[in-house]
Image (cartoon, rainbow, N blue to C red; front, side, top):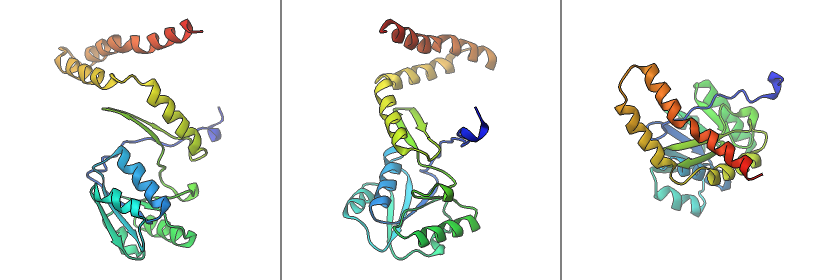
Length: 203
């Protein structure tokens, strides 16, 4: 595959309950971004800045650690922020937010503008301790959505119990690191093979 045609993003999982997240915009897009963040990380520390807020956004904020600031955007709001999401309906303001954030070396995402994004909010599947993040490199959010729906159905409901059991087993294994890895690999190998056999049996 040509290197220019691949997704070169590096996925990470952020502890947003110990980071400061700023969303600028209280309308439909701001609500969408806030909802997406809180669905995955209900304990996220978030501040939302806007002149006006949708009623649904206010209701959502009241249920979480979200501070609403009813003011026009000012670069001072970027102070001490780790992640910034620009979600206003004004292209000029969104680009100013991007410029200000870059000047402070703060990671920024400008909604629906991939060229002005240090990170994307991709599709996320969560079942207990298992979380899968999906990215189409900003090319097709609809594809990410469909893949999310697929994995939500494909992952077994008891996968969280399995992960917890494996964690207890890992802690009980004696031996060095390499031996532990080999034993865990042997124990979990059947997961992928079983799925493949079921697939072929059904054909």
